[in-house]
Length: 554
Image 1 (cartoon, rainbow, N blue to C red):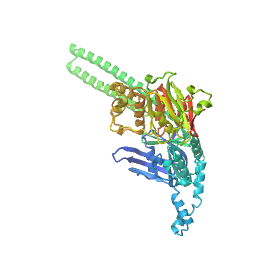
Image 2: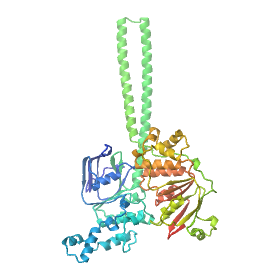
Image 3: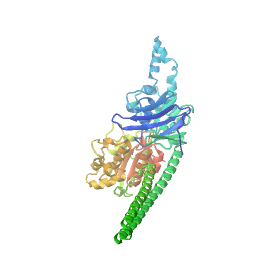
Image 4: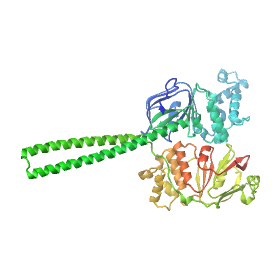
């Protein structure tokens, strides 16, 4: 069950905090709660305000109303750490000023400012290299001077983790730390979280449910509120499911009550109508003196009004109870689609690769296969996972498969590929001047608008929502539009290439992606470090980029 967010020994305290964007949109509404020592997983749908909350804690944003108290130093691992490609590793670690001062002192400087900057940091270079090495980043001589732009996405995240450890802040904030991390780097991240000092606060925003099993409690941003659950993700999920089942049962009972009150109202009106007919008949037959008849009529009208008021009041209360019960049931976020047009016969070759030299790939010989039976020929509805260490060349290989130019020599060359290929990239880019309907129709221009509308409804864009501008959409909604554009394309894709598709997606969006790919009947080539996701979409084989070669992997 949910529990109040603890206030004792809190390092971050929010009191009736509200944040409005300049356009008047409310991001957070009267939020109260706190984060104490220990490990907290911060979850919620895309656009719910998780990253906004972190920006408030760091002081990057100021609340529109309410108060935010932060007791201690704050360090953060942002999602966009690698965007400043010219920033050096030393700068990202926060040690560049100390290293520069130490270098000047070593060169003979006697400036007091240099000694002050170097004080307490004389061993920082060795400590930084040791920390980076422990996290799996090879600590060569020039590593600290290298720009972040020369590192892979996973290596940049590793640098960010090292910075958190070196800063030893009271409060550490991690925003989607598993994005772009390979399997080994993910495991090192888990080890960092498991060993987090109990007296300091660690807040992790993540969609990675495996990672969220390593926190002490879950805090959910839902409906502009913070809700705390003691225990890891599995405890939170079980509590939500039990709560939603109870809410659904309450809705069903409230619906039955509304129907019962409607029936009672109809029965009451029927009885009143019968009495009126008798009164009319008596009036016509002059059964009693007129004054007596009028008295009876007045009493009957008052009685009828009282009955109607009673039943109307009961019906209104039943409807109010139903509305309140429905408000406790979360919106159905499941994508339900059928994609028979994507079906690929088992024997059809959709993709074939060879080494850049033109010889059969090493994987074929390793498995005793003739070139025509290459392990790197994809046939039918196979689902291939492409793995490899950060920077090994996975994305470069995908660009080769897609026929895109690259400045880097790929580990394999495309021999043949079907024409019906879809691509869901890491970075979703859509034309913000178009509506949802126009965006998807651009990928399926020959399909009737009403048919596209019907399909969009299954992607949760029902009715007038299909007319919304892309510019108005949240990250999760943009992802669904991109996914719909790929899966509903005409001609239908028989091979889809996906590059880290779960990066920056909330749990609901990942569930929707799994639902959609479960309905897809073609071939998949997927780069992902999310083992849980790969298992859910039914991976049949694995390839690995290692030591400049493409290999089969168990």
